[in-house]
Amino acid sequence: MENEGRRSFLQIATACIGGLLSLAAGIPLIGFAISPAWKKGESQWVDLGLVDRLKNSRFKKVNYTFTAKDGWVKATKKRSVYVTDIGNGEWDVFSRTCSHLGCLVRWNESQEAFLCPCHGAVFDKNGAVVAGPPPEPLQKLEVKVESGVLYVKEA
Amino acid sequence: MKQFLKDRLPLDGMMDHLRKPLPKHINLLFSLGSLAMFLLILQAVTGAFLALFYSPSPDHAHNAVQYISGEVPFGSFVRGLHHWGASAMVIIVFLHILRVVLYGSYKAPRELTWVVGVLLFIVTLGFGFTGYLLPWDEKAYWATVVGIEISSTAPVLGDVVAKILRGGTEVGAVTLSRFYALHTIWLPWLAFGLVGVHLFLVRYYGSSGLPKNTDEEMKTGKPFYPDQVFEDVVGILILFVVLACAALFAHVPLEDVADPTNANYDPRPEWYFLFLFQLLKYFQGPFEILGTFVIPTVGMLLLLFLPFLDRSERKVLWKRPIALTVTSVSVIAIVGLTILGATAPKLETTEETPPTEQGQQVAPPDTQTEQTDETEEDVFDFQLTEEEIENATEVDEESQ
Image (cartoon, rainbow over all chains, first blue to last red; front, side, top):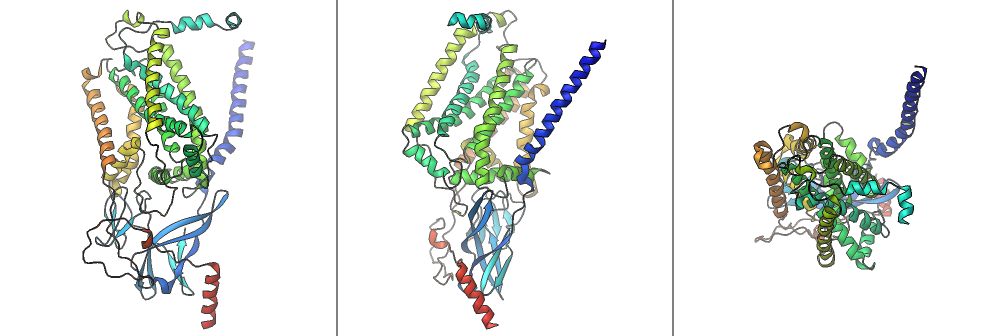
């Protein structure tokens, strides 16, 4: 009887030590692995070029690069947008990233629409969904003009 | 030496166990499990050798794969075996699952064997998904972008899961590093652990045999060793010859290095994910989640818990009308969607109006019938240098 009591104590103590070790090692390890979940992207203004050179643009494809941290790397990131001069110093800059699953859309002049090569999404010239699976419109990026240079907000 | 081992290990008991008779009438389909295990070992071995020359960083990965294929002696063959072995593994594991469904082998008492087997199937798909990012070519990049975006559509934790997979907010250096670790360390550990449990359960319960086997027939077939093992080895030899021929004579694709701005690229996943790629086209707007999350998740859960859902008597598939219907519809749907996905036309965009040097569009030509993708000339890069921005700011300040 005494032995049984001692053994059940040993069983519980072993389980407790095992659990404690698992928690002590497991919490930091899991935190280490999933830490990117809390990481927020840093936003910055990136220049697209002189306003004079982009004047009267209509869905002009413009590539640009910017530097951002990618883990331990300070990487040069590449992006591509569609720029439209809508007059009175206002600009429409559409992201080319499809709001469905991230493929790059292409502007089709004859259809006056953005077409996605992946799952058949179609957006009209205002970025609204016309056909296909996307649940949201094409993203219009925030822009500003400073000293004659057009900037886009890279989030 | 033999005596030395005999004195120290229960060799006789092990041999007796291996010589235990299998059920009567079992056929070639019962070798599929052994073929799957061979492929797992082949992938592990070829992958371990490929890792000798591979570097998991966006700056080097593509060059490393090019180097392996083009310059390392036997590199093209080793990469070919690994590449075609991956496809073969998906096919063999799929056929193995179908064999088990056909004969109802998942039924009691082998439910756990089935559950572990389905987990191994999920791990196999995980190997495929993490593996094809590693060459860091266009297909690798875009298929991963889309694949991770699919996971982000899951309710509640979707975004969190996507960020954890990417290691941040977009596919980049951390993603490649993570996928390499998952592909070469995490998933192999998991796979071999699950295979160990699967094999233990298979040997513990014995082969399921055919539904028609009587109790007597279950114990009086040919011995596992050497009869069945020999048949398995012949099957493995044939499979290896096929893979070796593919590695020697079939081209292993490596596309251009990943370019996040290349809108001319039509992203397509590996053939074994084409059914999902095609499925996503049919669910629009608020129903998107049905294609990205609900159907794949429910399908996988039904597969996982099949033995607990189908408690009917064990019979061959064509004598189980519900199971026959569900299996047939599933297989036809997967094969049909795969064919539709593979043959789906690629997007062609009307040639856009060529821009002038000032960045102004000129009028479109009268006859515009040719369909073409955008060219380098269509894309502008007007970005200024830091010096030019400073100059522009100074001029602006002076004018004020």
